[in-house]
Image (cartoon, rainbow, N blue to C red; front, side, top):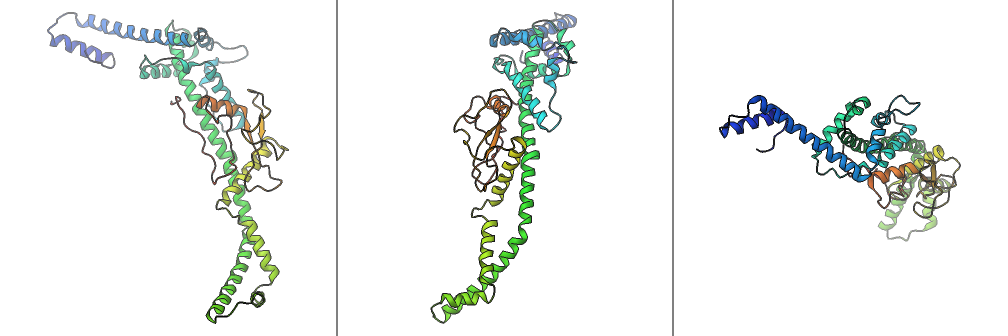
Length: 364
């Protein structure tokens, strides 16, 4: 008999095979019990394989999974129930809680369990069952079903926790930093627009007069005299106003094409410096050059100086990283090069760095 899904399909296929081969026994009632027993044996094998996979990772892992069902002293719910809670707010404390949750699940090393012999659909079904079941219901399960169900559930929660960290970090960056920094940059640019318009109007008049003088000299084959040209221009606009207009345009319109993005990055660096580590020095080491003073796992913000192109003196041209963000990057991408050098503000280029949203092995 070929593969089939569900007890009804298995029963109907067995009946069809018996009829096609003209076999009268077993009867319908006995066949029903045989189908149930076959499914129970298959489920028991799945539980045993999952429990064995957990023991292969760490002999203490099954006990650690069972311990997560207990309610710690002073708490109202078990540790497993706390792992099921996804972030509900877009805030710094919620980000810290999400990172702690991801680190706790990663420390169990359930992703190292080799479950390739069990169909992924079966693991997903056990994970869904664990998500909707209370801790008391999981405690009442017998071994090895309890360990197998907990392993499937925690593997599911491990992937979900990493997804939640990345999604929440992207939302925090966009709503609390990037969008507000871009709005501040746009406000500054709008405030400087009247000065730019006045300077541009002056330079337009000067250039129109200059072009007319050049055309007249070219048509008459005359040598253009500098003093005569300046007198012609000063008839339109005084020399000091021309010089001031040139300086204003040079100040407000940088040479590079990404002046708006440079201003946004400067505002972002200033906002991050002010909110996270006010009073931090404006000079220091670049990301990846030197050893910032950081205690792994402390979760304290660490100032890392990164020069920002286009930032003038007095601007906080550095960017801080957070130990927990580095740990989360390690969770998501493994020990990849660059996980220790995430830069929130680029020092060059015309766009913000894309948030690494790839989740190898962490799909829900």
